[in-house]
Image 1 (cartoon, rainbow, N blue to C red):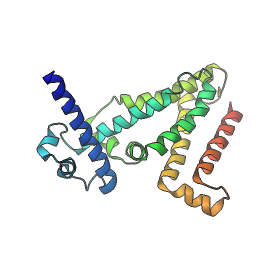
Image 2: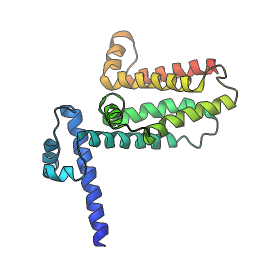
Image 3: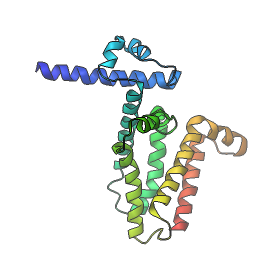
Length: 210
């Protein structure tokens, strides 16, 4: 029992470290956050932090992976949708919901450059969490091909086009730019209306392409 309690404490402490790091990275920026800052936020010594993470890069990368694991759980809610085209249409809404409900993770995963720098610096050829998320999209498009849809469009290229479109929408929204344009250029009542209208327009484009 003692071993189990110690392991739980270790896991809880690691989760607390990552939670504090995420808050500080977003508040102060990666470069301006020190290991000591993170330790002070949770009331531990910097030495304790180093027992779990060798540096900020590793900590940031751990957050990056955690975010992608969460994104995959969102996508898995669509696993029971048998029609791949209907699943592809729903993925846009699910992806946007993930970004809106987890803006901190979204920025860490897709806007800040530090996790990619870590991968390049340490030569990580396998990136399972990110690959799982992209594979769900790519597999859905490949299954659309099997149903006779998008036959003239290469699967990887279409997957990148879909992802890039949804990413652009999410980035504009989380940064506040989408709401500014809404107020200046449209009569739509709120940002949700613009978001839904944009997704629906993109779906109509996919309908014509299939």
